[in-house]
Length: 216
Image (cartoon, rainbow, N blue to C red; front, side):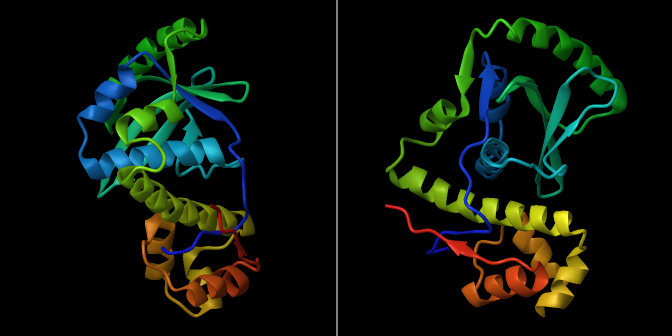
């Protein structure tokens, strides 16, 4: 995308932190594509006030543990965390979807880790992690990462607006004169989208308006 487009402009709503190097061990073992998708998802959780349940949900039967879900080419990666005021603390390793038996075993360990994490030691911010793994702002690699994140975030914002309106992808497609497949791809991170089509989806499909910001 050669422009910045958002349904609404938002500041970072919370800070995401990693406990020790558990997450780093999981992250380092992934492909480049999965690594990017994971970091984009974590950034969305920092940036948005209301996060679609597609990306994070409370784990039933636990006291304050949440599961961050990252989908990539049919695989589902799960990352566990908890909220501490305006912070999200990631604890434990991320892993691909496993059986309920293994999940229960892992949750027992995570509850102990949560208690240790409350001491607020050995914590690394998401911003620091991205700087070290992707590169500092202004570097070529970081610029590419940020541009791709903008496209991903746009898809999440459209999904969020659609769900708040109580509309299905089929209904938005019909209202905006496109098709369900296009709406689905847009919500999942469609890299190339015509500006006129985006305007139509937001105005006619969602009943909103598009705000554009150019930042230097």
